[in-house]
Image (cartoon, rainbow over all chains, first blue to last red; front, side, top):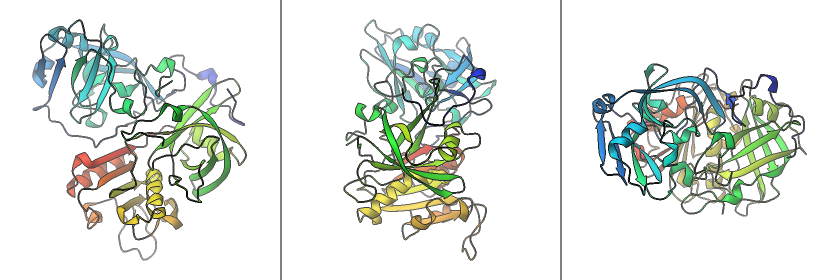
Length: 202
Length: 248
């Protein structure tokens, strides 16, 4: 790879080993990036639905999903626009709990996460099972703000953050992969930050 | 073309190439435009962006996205095919923007890939209302330039918000019958409008109905502008938003 004349970058001595390649530590900032107008979704009409290739299509209201066993994620998040944030906590419910109620069919291999805004993002089923994904409504102990996807967003912290759909309204289980919103617009189908899977073909 | 009718970015556009810096030009005290020559011309849509990647001698890299400011090259003289202009805002402590402001000079090579993004992109053939704040005007300038170059300036209405006259990007070129400039902190002498944020009254006569609306700026600007647009009667589904984050 050719070097850029006169570019030395920030000191690597202080580079945090928790940072995937090409990422920087946003520290106190939590940047906001989404392509649509920020919606206002009242919890009185909020629902979350698991549908598609499942034995039981299940929908939860705001109160019903809060009655499920709580689950917390503590750790880092990584945005494809190159910021990462460490030591965050998110509270909600594990996607495993939701899928256990809906019972995916053996043919299900992928999920499409869908938002109340119409936003979509695709994921392999294996990336949202076994303790790797949550539906969350609190961040760092406070209710998730609308700009960060409140009242509730998907959280898949081991992948770039566009996979963690804001204002999430459900998961649709599929027997094939299908591109979501950013993926159709050139972003990677999986989005592993440690492999720098930012765009299609990376 | 770089995008399909469905807005998908072709894989070819995502190959890195070594662009040559042809010229640099200051737009404001904190923004400068780089004109780049691309070894492989890849036509863009107004609103798309490129990624610039800097590589240090030890292999460390830093990359950031910058919107294309120049019009899509459709046989025009300026810029010719294979040349693009990116406008870079200097961010406080910005690792990449600082380099692009302080170090880069004509003749340097920069690794780039693009054009990227099919959602925040204007077709060039349908009515559009463009609302930009600060550096958020950059992709909208590409749209305005395209509209003017293709004699379709009637399609475009641009509302641009700047803190002061000194901070207005493309000041000499951006003004015209399509453009409404709003100053939020300091107005030029004799301005008819007091300094202040975008308000519903500023959109009077600009919303025609049925147009696509492109909003670009900081997250705070984007959300405030979106709220004003909705209050002015714009359907929320017709609004496309690009938020510029503090990405250095």
